[in-house]
Amino acid sequence: MSLRMTYVYRSTSMQALTLRRWLSAVSLLMVLSLITVFLSMLFGSDALRPREIISAFLARVTGNDVSEVTRTILFQIRLPRILLAAIAGGSLAAAGGMFQAILKNPLADAYILGISSGAALGVVVSLFVPVTLGMYGFTPASIMAFAGALITLYIVYRISIVGGKVPPHTILLSGVMINAIIFALILFLTSVINSSHLYRVFFWLLGYLSSPSYAALAMVALFSFLGMAILLVHSRSLNILTLGDEEAETLGINVEFVKRRVFIAGALLVASAVAICGPIGFVGIMVPHAVRLLVGYDYRLVLPVSFIGGGIFLMLADTFARTAASPVEIPVGIITSLAGGPFFLYLLRKKRLV
Amino acid sequence: MKSVYQLSGVYFRYGDAWVLEDICLDVMEGEMIGIIGPNGSGKSSLLKLLSRLNSPQQGDISLRGVDLSLMDQADIAKTTAMVPQESTFFFPYTVDEVVLMGRTPHLRGRLFEGRHDMEVVREVMHWMDIAGLGERPVTEISGGERQRVVIARALAQEPDILILDEPTASLDIAHQVEIYHILTRLNEERGLTIILSSHDLNLAAHYCHRMILMNKGRIYAAGTPSEVITEENIREVYGCPVLVDAHPVSGGPRLTLLPRELKTMKVSP
Image (cartoon, rainbow over all chains, first blue to last red; front, top):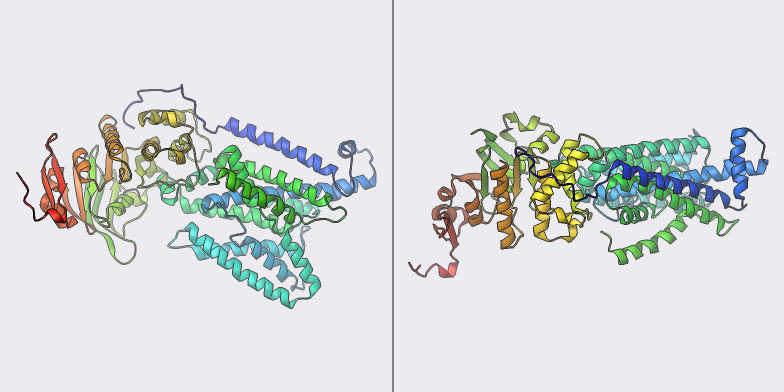
């Protein structure tokens, strides 16, 4: 600007997000998340005492011996499952928050775009594939689910391109249509397979957590952190994209580039989570909404807080799923929907969301 | 005077029909220029070409001598800021947050604004008289305030050129005058080049140095307000009878609508 600044105002404080505020919010939540991990380890069909857990962890470091049973329960069954809940819940929540922003729709999440049905189709198809695809501790079903989710999102994205641009409403509509087509395919395929497979497909569609191998967990974490890193890099641009494509463009944002990148990130986050856990409902819609009510609408904060908060939410839901009807386990997708649906309706009525 | 924008032989279309045809226009440094014309005459399309939201199929547009199509998006945003006709906010960002978004082209990939960014934003907010609104959600303030917030966001880009698409369209008369007053001050005190489109011919004629009258995608007339706002021009382009006389205070052109029922009546001297 050609005119010198005539005034310098320091009196009015601005509620801008600074790195310091960002770090304090994120680290506070990290601590809460660790506490949740610890609490979740206490519960299960076989309750462990806090001291047992601490000494088992100490034993890892010092090489002291703890009972074989405790070690197996803790490190082979409980911990990997809790970590999976933290990562999958976080991935679903962060991706959901991202989709709501770029599609400018409060109900948008990965499932509306056909990702879950694509993954489900992958699982059903895997029942027909005779060869075993297992690697890195992944089952053939989860590899096919991962592929199915990515391919579906790619198709939805390609179909939605109009004149080099991707308008939000076309992507939502084509997502809904692809979803319907894939579900018809799933129903067709399941109607011709035998009933024991049918049960597996049904159970998978509910969304459930199991205890993954550490190799599989590491792969999920890798995809998830990669997706999260891409989202964080573009988090400020996401704020501006909610103003509309043209306004974002005039503010100097390369809109289609950013959209493509965050779509890839969202696909990685959701596909890796869905591949192992199945489509766990409501995390992607409910968590980001709650987070925005708590911390505001700045996506630099919304995304990491949704990730950690989604993890905490799914860890708690899964702990409940493991213990409420023990020894029978409730699929965690039922818990999240039962908790999430009413909570969401409450927010909708009370806070007049968006 | 140097020209900031130079358009020569510009043609643009969305589909099959040309929306803009043979546009030749020089926008001079420091001028305040008003684009008028009926709905669909190509005003908004022209403004979108200037901020490269659209690119012409034929012809050249240069910004300070540089071919606009070759420029970096962020560099354009540091030179030209656009205030759209209507801003919709999907999320209720605070006024502070909205104005800070204007710093985007200066951040160069940084995630957090620095002290300098804060100072710029504070200053433009004071200028636009919205410093007191800082923490209010932008969805809960009045239309006049929101327009000032959006202009403040544009100013936070520290542009040399401000483009506004019908900046007073949804405002009451007091706020309309206020916006024009602000724009005039920005133009005079800060030397901003201002390009705006308007349906309010009287206000535009009063405040703009030069006017462009668009008709069916072409420039029908260009010149000073009194050259452009004539009874013949307006009747020809808008297709409605008007009376143009001298504004009693400013002496500039004053346009009065003549509704159909009045056409047969004699205008008393």
